[in-house]
Image (cartoon, rainbow, N blue to C red):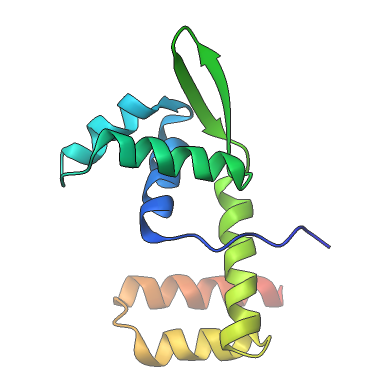
Length: 125
């Protein structure tokens, strides 16, 4: 059974998405990206990235005086692990209940609905 993932906050997920997209990044790289849409202290980004490394989501290497962070877990692995935990906790282990809730309560475009229907058809094949 895969190791249980630690819960992640909004800022942790935000930083993980940036590092997944870039492949690897320094604190300064991540800070610069976040500053394009909101204010955040450099030290806040640094602290969150260190915590993500401590939790096993990021790996790092020293490059001069900087640390370069890279994903320690793939985006797919993290998303699946967190989703599995949510299904267990919120939907009593039922993926069907989760999908039903999404279909009934989310504002999905026709394209998104067709995509879900296509995925279900492929499962039947």
